[in-house]
Image 1 (tube, rainbow, N blue to C red):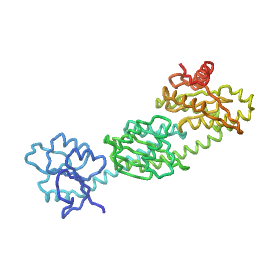
Image 2 (tube, helix red, strand yellow):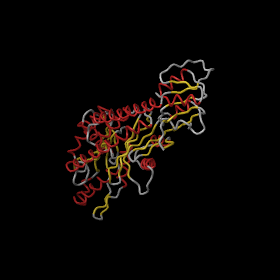
Image 3 (cartoon, rainbow, N blue to C red):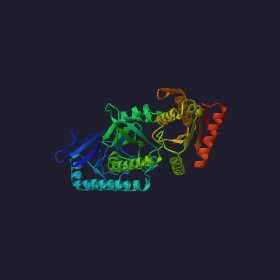
Image 4 (cartoon, one colour):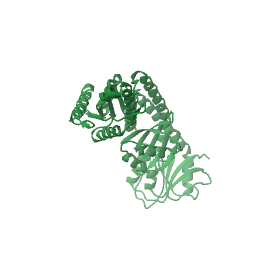
Length: 436
């Protein structure tokens, strides 16, 4: 059923939200506080204040915050003289009906003006997105997209996750929780924020909007890239948008977001043909410098750190000499698979040459990076590399360096990580050594 007008009624006017002359959709509130708490979820053509006391400060807050015509029941006890545009008084229910009926055309015009303003904002957002998000490489696209949403929608933080579809059809928010619980990095902060999602208020194929216990909106944007994999951009506690504004903006923006991500995938797939090592299926040395330069540029623009792990297989010459190069090559192939399994989608793994490997951990430094390196060292130490039914056990020495803490250039960060690795190898092998 459609309604001519949507009214917010604070107080008790009519038992059903209808009168004999008017048909409208009514939302009843017990107090102004309750109305203001729900105002980001709903859009009203007018607000009726019935049998409540209101002072000048409350009225100014209401007028400036909601920008909606007000109808206030006249109260001789209220000594404050309110003279504002689009603030009207009524004495009783018939008087209110006459005033609203008389202003119906203006109220509907205001609704149309608000809808046009909202559409113009959506078009402006699309244009700004195209100006701000310009790179087609996946990591830079993710960084620029998150920065755009955080700035444009005035929120503290966002998150970008790769979500693999499970065999059971979980609701989107449970898919994310399931994925986070299986992540290799600490996600307790985001899990706590998800716990604050109290009610889903909009569900679309490509985005969902939730009420958060903080009073803000929690928004999930989805990109379906096929092969059972989705990308999810989480907008964490958005306070600058009402629900209808978010719906208007995102219904257009999410289409562009999907198309641009698919372009990133196409570029990435083309790079794979040129930049992959044929033995290990990791990236090769040719691509390393390009990634480092991108990461350094990203740090200059967004202050995002990264870490470099320089990995060398201990006593690998003994494997080749005692078991032959065929077995040695098989060990390196398995080593590449193990390293790829230990990193996130936003990280990079390279075969640097021979039995040397390099990992780049995005947005990671300090203790977090050391913990990743130590986990990799232990995993390889406990791994059974089986090649042609021959079991081989190896260990690795890992040098660790942080950008920009340890270095200011691509060549320098590799050299420092390499030196840290050799220091650890000369000291004991099977060790993680952090550059000083």
